[in-house]
Image 1: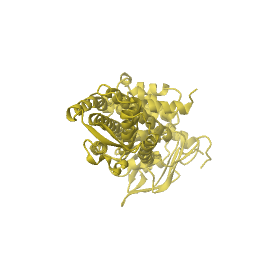
Image 2: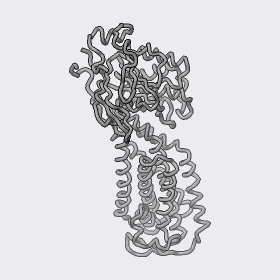
Image 3: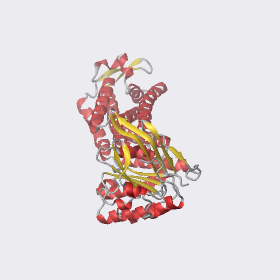
Image 4: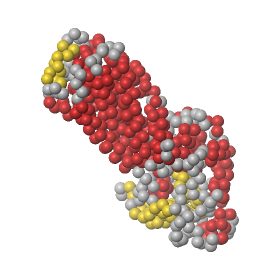
Length: 232
Length: 266
């Protein structure tokens, strides 16, 4: 059976009297792309912050297997450092020996001419690309992305999806949260976060096992395990 | 040979220091404010008027020049403002970035160590400049001892800046508090402006011990080691409190992480 890369078990989170999460259960498997959609204020970012370890749930567990990359919604960079200095800093953070993959990502996302520039002088879109590069440069087994394509132009948006395809082929599991998805067909599973719980956004798609995506065949068909151990 | 831990520590320290070096406002303050402040003291304080200063190292009153004493307290005031401001600004600005580093696996103790290294380096650099510049206005008895007093004050206010940087959300509140702390604290130590400066309650202020050390350097050759320890006690108190809050705010909450290849099947 295929092991999940991320499993959320019975997560509850409240801020004062406001109940944000009320029993969130789902799992993510290698090579899959999962989306969580929800209205503004539904608790998507709270959920992602708990999954990343940034927030503590009031109840429940998060089990993670392998290395994680986390790209928060807000671009969190240091304006006083250049792009190259960020890459070098995160090399120390991830304790990796070289920046080969980081260089590939910079070229793929098309901002190599800014490598010597101070981050404080970059446009919002370029900062977003660096934000994404920092989450990916250590080749994580799980990638958590919060509204990842905000600020991307059309060309970079397309490159982003090429990158997602490449990551899935390598076996990386991706969780993307957004307030809306224009291209749900790209996802293996899409959940809706509503009233503190995740519900299947498109039940036909999730349970039909139509085999329309390579990763679905690989993870569910070949290994023969149900990818959602918590039927919703 | 530097191991992996050493390399990771050096990287964080290098970029923390680089960020400090790019704090233009602090550098302008350092280059311009310190000499202007020394110069203004010459205009405002009568140069040949003697004053009694309670020198607690020996327990006696020192009969010293009010101008020279005011130069020392002006130097202390300037460096405490600048170092407090530098540590407050960088700590406050980097809060989210630091948390991102920790969430992605950078060890918190190394980050804390890098911040402490930066505090010491900034305090040393600023006080070397401020004490070196003092020679243009006056030749104290022992310049290294004056520097030691300045350095102790800078460490103490660097610790305060770090504490306020993790505590306060707004920039303005932090600046205001550092300015008020530094002005009141250093002003209280000087009997030229404050007739109560020789009272015993003054010992409870953070710049009390650094002032005594600087005065020892300016007018005697006594080395008051116990006052160095007292200054370090203030530093330790501010830094421990600040780093405890920093540790709490940037910590990664417990997530069960397993080795990908060794987990049992569900």
